[in-house]
Amino acid sequence: MNAHQTGHPDAVEEIEEVLAEEKTSMLRQPMAVWATAIAAVFAFMGIGLVDPILPAIAKNLQASPSEVSLLFTSYFLVTAVAMLITGWVSSRIGGKKTLLIGLGLIVIFASLAGTSNTVSQLVGFRAGWGLGNALFVATALAVIVGVASGGTATAIILYEAALGLGISLGPLLGALLGGWQWRAPFFGTAVAMALAFIACLALLPKMKPAAVKTRLRDPLLALGHKGLRYTAGSALFYNFGFFTILAFTPFILGMDAYGIGTVFFGWGVFLAITSVFVAPVLQRRFGTTPVLIASLLGLGVVLLVIGLAAGHSVPLVVTMVVISGGFLGINNTLYTELAMGVSDSPRPVASAGYNFVRWMGGALAPYFAAQLGEHFGEQVPFFVAAVSLMISIAVVLIGRKYLRAHEPHGV
Image (tube, rainbow, N blue to C red; front, side):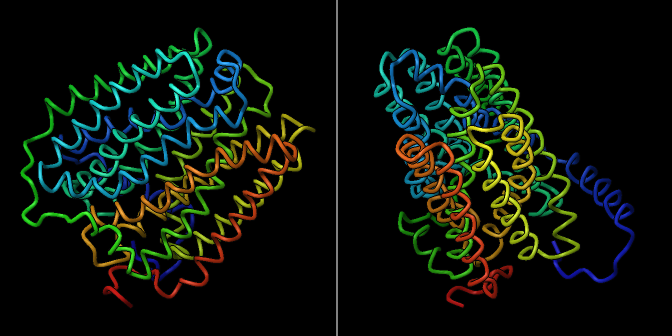
């Protein structure tokens, strides 16, 4: 999108025009895009699925919050590392086969997670789940960007819409099933991913392996581009704040699975709305970097307020969590678009390098937040996360001159 569009039409008219334009371009998509996007919704449900049942898992398996937080850590750590091999795999066997392998692994490990009798088993199966997630998610983004009509910007909005919808539905499904039995959400996910597997198998056309094979080192070499490196570095600290909210907040709400699920459903809906409709409007009017900095600052303030309210006002915590979803939706769209367009690397390679770095934030935050909460009080994790957001802003400010689309490598 053009960050320096001339003219300043009335804000309401601009929003209406953008919504009409995005709706038209997004609806006119090949069947392969819709099949992949629907499967992506199911895949992203797995991120927030365990959120409402974290306290129940801790209680039933006699585990501490930090032990249960390893469900996120193992999942995202394996997802991050596996990003480095996704391009190598998909360029040799094709996108469709890679997607199907990823979905198949999620079905297997989600089912096994439902049979766990110890936290260690559950953490291990979530790690396997993370491998399947990496193979699917990285390839899904590349497939959608590669075949969607309407250009890269429309494809990214579709991808972020799937992410937002999946993240919002995940806690809801986790609450509905987890309120009955804490194992049920895992089996429910396995069924959903099996349906996604069948949909992709039936609807996706055969995809030939890439003419140029991706080397294992290519994602790391892609990070040699300063623009992509600054984008990924900022996203790492941003994701630390993101997953502090997602993974630690359930322990301070004092609610059952239904209550936690409702809170994070609202959070996810707000995230989906801003990622699809608000982020493009703000980006066109003010430019990518200014909007990203402002949104990161807003999220940092929200984290600070959550920290001050923790242990004192559950209604204020709930309000701030839902509001945080709005900032998260804007940030997700802007970061993804930057990662896809800031460098001259092929999109799958740039995506792999970027996701390798940023998912490390998702791996580190849950465990560190739980440890900080257990040893220093439930307010401290949110204060640390707010500081992490300030670091994220600093990285953007330092590297802002490199955050321009398709600059050559090494600028």
